[in-house]
Amino acid sequence: MKAVILAGGAGTRMRPLTYVVPKVLLPIAGKPLLERTMVYLKSYGVTEFVVCVAYLKKQIMEAFGNGHDLGVKIDYAEADSPLGTGGQLKTAERFVDSTFLAMNGDIVTSLNIRNLLETHQRMGGIGTIALKKYEVKMPYGFITTDEQGVIKKFEEKPTLSFMANAGVYILEPQVFASIPAGRGSSLETEVFPLLISGGRRMNSYFEDAEWADVGSMVDFERVNDQALGQFAENTG
Image (cartoon, rainbow, N blue to C red; front, side, top):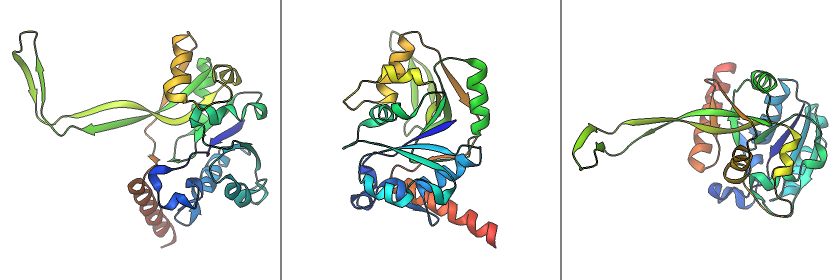
């Protein structure tokens, strides 16, 4: 199974670092984020990668080449400018002809890829989306009223829990037909909703795995500190 890594974004929330370095090359405990992603997937037997690149793409391509140093094979799906998650994925179409894994390039996770794939194979459909349980602590009291405005329930600063997109997918190549060519698009707000509304089966998969979106400076510093702490424990 091939893995398509979406690594073409400009990383605007990571500026000023990403003015000169693409986000997937930023080091987490001394190793580039993209390297960590490929090593993680390789542990599940994934050795063929399509890396979708755009912003500062030459740096990424020069850093990893054909993947020989990591013991993998890398092809690059190139765009001249960031195209969003859907547009990025579309650039990989010519490299994919069977069931594949797609993953955002700014994620650190311990998700069991083997279980995700087995779930997709068992349930069928055009895709299976890994989910992340997300909790939000409300800053205000939550009030429920009836139609006359009479308060029926008051809950002080509750914690709301919901399932969120983890940015890791098992997809069938038929998904490319629903992604517009030649322009940017979003998997989350355009492509997946279009597939679901059209009656295509999209499955979900959840496990209580470690997960972090390295999308902001706060997230980057937190994940880097955690990785450094784990490294210290393993070498101490």
